[in-house]
Length: 150
Ligand SMILES: [Zn+2]
Image (cartoon, rainbow, N blue to C red; front, side, top):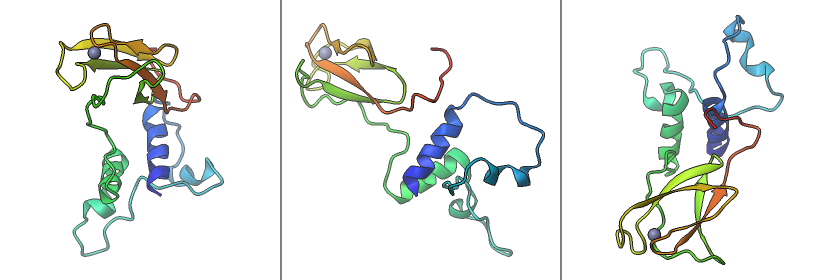
């Protein structure tokens, strides 16, 4: 349920804004797919009740609420893995939902050398010129999704 919600919300968030069709809202949701998709909106409060985030949050906020319930950090705040030096044979994998991601290496352990920024892409692994740690982009995205500014 949660993972399905992440997928559908990510798809919505990443899609280029489409001009809103002049279509009645009531006819829109069910038509797009045969299979039931995860809802990124709740059922709302019952009459006489004050709504909670659980029942009334929608969209990205709801995604975070659902994530918290399952102990999943939806928007990852963890720093780059600096527990080891990546080697050519066993590079440090860096998750990404796009084909490139900026990384800042400070060596292993973290802060052992000055911060060096590198642009990691799916085409090319990067090796830090300072500590020699090798990084590889671990692409998690969907190629059917198109990104702007690329
Ligand atoms: Zn380094």
